[in-house]
Length: 272
Image 1 (cartoon, one colour):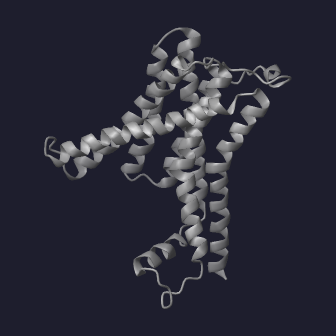
Image 2 (cartoon, one colour):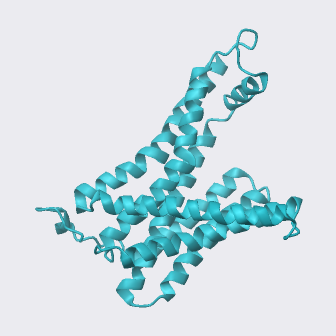
């Protein structure tokens, strides 16, 4: 009975995590669209920005790995892993900021306003949440549900796969929940970064690009570093939540919550 209860709690926890990582970003998009008339194409720009960044990072990593394999760069073992982690965090922050800024500057639409910035931030952060966590978790969850009562004697699956599935069912129910909190914190961070990029247009200084880059680099770098040094998962999530509170305060100081509610009434707002 205890095993069945634990499995039920894990199913509930994973379902909640799926709602946070997949449904929440989509719901945020619907809210922006219905309340402030932010067109879906603007939200899509943010999502496309994320995919562009990931493609560029893969391209750089391909060249980097080739340099290591050819022994042009003498990196092995732990040094190679550390370099990969640093490069991933650094490029993610740098390219993420530059791609969003270039889109807001050069796309033939009025994207230098608060509503559009939120749309781009939701699209970018939402795409990361869905692709990085939501869809992989959904695939794993379907596999787990399809093999709830797997029998090693009669199953045609490889024994290693069976063992992996059984280990997945042993995961404590709180793990998916706290993981969802980290995704919410990351989602808020991407919105904050996009609002900082908006300041380049509203305040006329490119120093805000440095602030946006610095924020994403510090937040993601700190979380990854703490995880790599072996800090307990719960403490890592707590740090992420503290940083999220800091991001929310920064949004408040930037007056990013001062929407004009009249923009969501009457005819749909045009972003040209």
